[in-house]
Length: 401
Image (cartoon, rainbow, N blue to C red; front, side):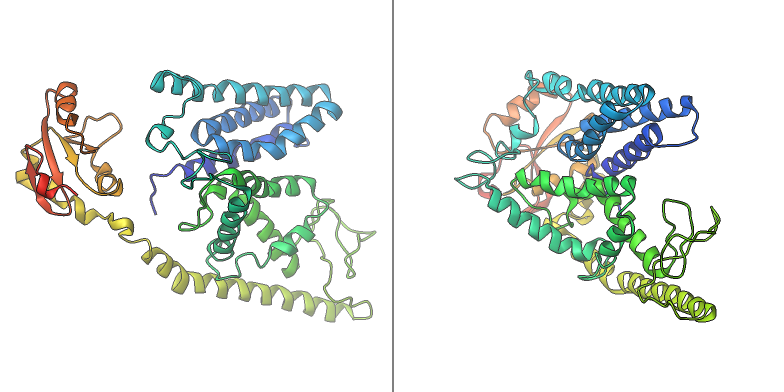
């Protein structure tokens, strides 16, 4: 499924940062050169995330920022140097945000996004959100609850069961500092986005998408723990009671804490229990995945088809030979809401070099402004709801919404 939203790229950068961070400060046995390369990668990835989704980058950075402070206090000289390098690179790459805003608006602190939607800002009080009193912490909590409710199903496509294995994963990794810190990213994002006025449940909790791996890794750990596949970080096997085995061999398959203490069970009974347990969890996961593919996912995607009236069918008039002859042209789209115009953005590129480029508005001076800006292009008024196959050289008042 394709998307023009930046969340997928943000997730790639977020994952890249976390993996590189542990490569820079947490790997054992790696060469120093490899660790420094990992530090450069971590700084570049988080910096690019700050450029792509600045607010989400803060949420991803908070847990590791705390970890970085601890390492600056307790770490070796080499570790402190790599932590400082990561921070320096994040700051340098992140400076592209105010630089771009200065070029685009003349003000490094002015987000161009707010020129279209001035109320769409992070924070609380009047001016943040669409209500008169502005955004409140209570509204933020309501939004978060809705996002969590959708996430219960959307995470793996298991209605109200997608978080089934999370508690077991937290328990299984309770002594694994790396996993718990990595798992805290999604929590950091949920807390941070309490300050944003609008929720995100139509497409799931997408504002927390950059922390998706927190949930998937913890869920995977829970599945493995329940199935008896879990390998403790210590590298030692566990005996039948879930305690470290005195004669355990490193690197071999690990035992697992038993849900039922079978202290008096024979070795054969214990082995049968482990096999049955693994088979049962595997069967359960298989059924859940199949249910998602057969029932949940098709229904969820069908609900997004032609959402807001946006579909490929509405672009068909621009593919006809008659309309192609009008190019190059600027099309003034007349509609009630911006989605009437947004439907056609797939027909233009960001550099405005395509046969058709589109604008949205109904100001009397708009056509003159466009003619002066694009003298080589024809200017046409377009009414997609009333006359989808007709283009007018002048505004038609009776068709104007």
